[in-house]
Amino acid sequence: MSKVKDPSLATQGELKIEWARAHMPVLRKIQARFEREMPFRGLTIGMCMHLEMKTAALGQALKAGGATVAITGSNPLSTQDDVAAALAKSGAHVYAWRGVNEKEHRENLFQVLGHNPQLVIDDGGELSVAIHTELQRLIPQMIGACEETTTGVHRYRALEKDGLLKYPVIAVNDAYTKFLFDSQHGTGQSALEGVMRATNMLIAGKTVVVGGFGWVGRGIALRAKGLGAKVVVTEVDPVRALEAVMEGHSVMPMKEAAKIGDIFITATGCNQIVTAEHFKEMKDGAVLANSGHFDVEVDVKGLRELAVATRTARLNVEEFRMSDGRRLYLLAEGRLVNLAAADGHPAEVMDMTFADQALCAEYLIKNKGKLEPKVYGVPPEIDRSTASLWLETHDLTIDSLTTSQSQYLNSWK
Ligand SMILES: NC(=O)c1ccc[n+]([C@@H]2O[C@H](COP(=O)([O-])OP(=O)(O)OC[C@H]3O[C@@H](n4cnc5c(N)ncnc54)[C@H](O)[C@@H]3O)[C@@H](O)[C@H]2O)c1
Image (cartoon, rainbow, N blue to C red):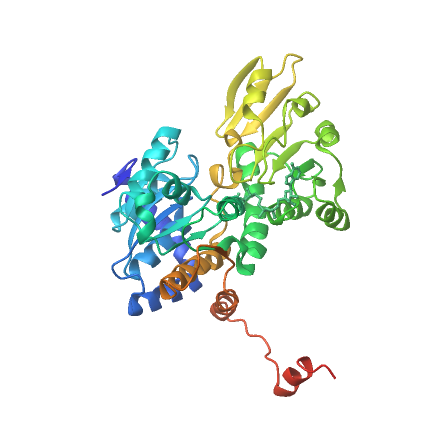
């Protein structure tokens, strides 16, 4: 069973998935092994993820490994209706369309959980929060969960800290082969792409203010700098602020950055990063975008209250006119700009992330009953395996330690 916007879009979606798969050789290799070994035979995997072409490729790999897959989108604007239609046609249970409201999103989450999953793959922790709070009857059958993003990992760790976590969770987000590439290079490139697609603005010469210098923020700062922008970073962590300084960026509080920024991109995972006190200081024409998981980083409600008029300026661009005549432009309703206004991360980086997801899901199954209800890091052998497969599938080889080198490195003498 599925509920998508328009099943007739499936052919277009199939082309997109084929394109993604063509750039995901690691996942293809894992899928081929899954087809032989069927690690998920008889199991149902519930997924709540940005439903675009790369995610569909992951869903199909899990299905090829014997799983029944039920999936919904993790953000109202990141679902691509053609991909959702194609994934449904390929046999997954899909409950997703672009533009869902809160009520529909919740219904879709419960539709997925209605398939009685033993494993969930979350991007933001939503399926597991629903299981822990409202569908506790599923807990006894749950083998575990994998989490895709920093914000979701925070939520799972908070559940664990309160002693409430009921099954093992792997923080896939924390794999080296995830955050070093997906969060940094994937979001870095695609967030800028989202801003450029939405606005068609020149980045060179602009002042780009990046809120947060974590893995996502540093990627955005790096790409903005590469496009010729002057980058200003805002932070609350002195070490990360220091890193930003050493990368050649300016660092200052948002109150000061607000006065000089042309483009603001938040990526903190925290809320209220750009608020009314900042909107009042901003230049005419300032652009506001978010790349953090939830739409809480730009205070959209505050912006709406300050504005005397609003209108849609372009697709994914809303204009807010202030009482003094200044206009501020909000992209994609303050939701993840890289997914709402572009296609999200390039397939080559999602290849690693989704290889990690597929291998961690398999790890949970293989270790059923042996893991505690805790948040686990990604087993180092999975990280290494993903990295090795990526190099191998790109015809890249590296040196290996000789015996005497190994002995040298392991000696205290
Ligand atoms: N758009 C995407 O596709 C995508 C991809 C990966 C992660 N994410 C999301 O992006 C967000 C950031 O992820 P990350 O992995 O970079 O996290 P991170 O924890 O590595 O970095 C966040 C940074 O923001 C800083 N920060 C926190 N509160 C702040 C505040 N009030 N003002 C200024 N700085 C503040 C922190 O000190 C930290 O350095 C999360 O919500 C994550 O889920 C989005």
